[in-house]
Every structure is written in structure tokens, then in C-alpha cells.
Length: 290
Image (cartoon, rainbow, N blue to C red; front, side, top):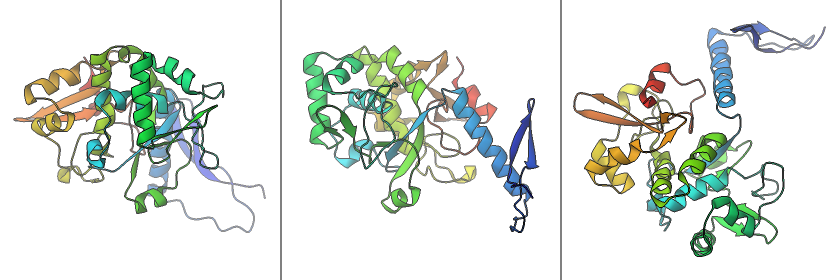
């Protein structure tokens, strides 16, 4: 008997769950409705990534812990540039989380300065800061990024969880598009850095900024209020909403808002960070329309 596996095939616009293969004499687990639902959602998540550029990296962080709490001296501008340069990492081999162009050519120090579009002094200050904090390692002919900050490819989630680390799927093309738009000015790159600072608070299920991002039950999610968001990002309360509204991606807001009564909840556009193993709800996407 030919080999058989269980999966999802597509017939036109419709996804069809089928038993595609079984091996003679092999035990085949009964496929439950939950199994089929999981397969369907996994396929939808993969399709979502493909629709938004197809490639992604993993941003590593401690959930619900401010980026500044780790003692880093990085500024909002630094966070924006770090996130952008991390989109050029290749799959780690022997711990070598190398920066390369899309054609595979290594990125050295001179090439990185050109990539970031920084003047000599600004680049030197930024680069030295990353080296001091062991975020990057200069290997002369190429540069590596510390795997505790970013990774690409398969993750050992058990290892990261044991160390108290979490990770978010970070879509490459949107980050590069945003940097091309906002990375050239001080104000623009400052607002772009808020994206990375928001990471530890993004709900895995809804993309809202919350204190308990791993909580799956919406009723128990504790969203940050505007005062808390302002404190997180280092803005006055009356200035934070205009700052968040300034960053846009292909005509959509990067930060969206939903208000119920007097409480306003901030969301991050799932076209940039998306953790759930399914497609974003259409109602969520409405929060980012102009």
C-alpha cells in the first residue's frame, strides 16, 4: 500500500481536509475535529505570512518586562535600527547568527553603516553600544547578532521557555518597508522604535498591549491603559496617541485603537508581529484602517 499522510489540500478557494496517505501495517491515529481545526488554522497562519512578504525572523524577549528593565542603554532610535538590521540574519549554523544580504553576501561593518543610512559618528556610537552590550559580534568579514535577541528558522522553544524567554514571529518585508519610510529622520525612527519596545506586552492571541500576554482567555486579559502605554514608551499621556498614529504601513496604522467606554486599548498591526497559529480576525484588522 502506498504511503499516506493526513493534511490539508486546496481545491480552488476552498480548503479541504483529506487523508492523503497511510503505510501498510502502520498505526494511524484517528483524526478528530480538533485535529482538523488545528491543521486549518496552521495553514491559515502560513498563508498570512506569505501574504505579508513570506519571510520572518524570531524576536526574542522577556514577556511583560520592559526592554529598559534589562539594563540596556538602547534608545528608541537604537531599537528601530536593531530591529531593521536583524531582518538580515541568516539561519544560525554553529551559533553563527550572521548578517547577510538577500543574495547571501556577508554584511561587514562598512556595509552595515550604508544599510542603516547613518553618518560616521552616529553609526560609530550605535555600533559601539551594541558591541558593549554583547548584542553584536564583529567577525571582521561579517557581523553576528546574539541569538538571545533574534533568530531565524526553527526554534528550541523548550530551551527558551526554561530561560524565561519568549519569542514573536516578526515579518521581514513590513519591517524593511517601515525603515525605508521612517528610518531617515530622527522623529520617524524614534516612533518606529516603539514597535520593538511594545513586543513584551503584545498578547499572543489578540495583539493588544497587555500585562499578561500569554493569557488565552480574552476575559482575563489585562490591557494596558493609555497612561501605562505612555509610561512604557516614555511619552506624556497627551502625546502618546499622536506619536503612535504617525507610523503607517501601506496606508494602515501600525498601532490601532479600540475604545469601550472610557477605556482605550492599543493594538499592534499583525502584518508586522503575529504570534497566534491562525489568521488574524477581520475585526482586528479594522483597527488599523485610516
